[in-house]
Image 1 (tube, rainbow, N blue to C red):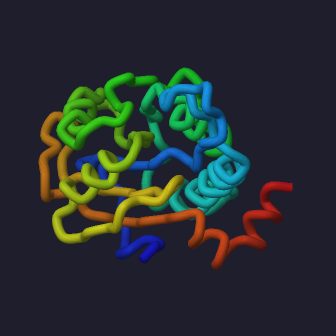
Image 2 (image 1 turned 30 degrees about the vertical axis):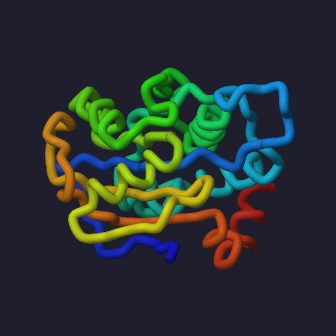
Length: 201
């Protein structure tokens, strides 16, 4: 089930925050493009900014709200077109500098072990990183990181927000993270559609 914040969140400098995002819905109509080159379809282009605005307001303190977790320091994305486009849309909506978007080819169709290696290499000055990748790797990665929770396979543009009990990214390990929120486009459409439409005007 999609969820909002699961429990009280108190940002701490001794914690790292990792937001895992599956790319938005892609277009399967073209027979001439490779899997790596597939773009977002109309639904994906609609969902990505809506989810980003929801995250910004609900978690990152946009529009004068209370920040539950720090605003992302970096956005790290697979080089696939659909993942990059999702990341660039969210970068713009959240208000992160373009220079803070990092393209990592290893994240394309990556296994959980590869995604963990990427995390281990993050700069320790970054307190919060958003990572954009693909199923099944991104869903498996999230579930292997969780200490207690379990989520079903992440739908397109689904977001899992994790709190990691380490102050060094290199210390990241399986079965130790806390799930602090899980958001899907369907949740937003059902519960917050009017508010998000108003904000986008």
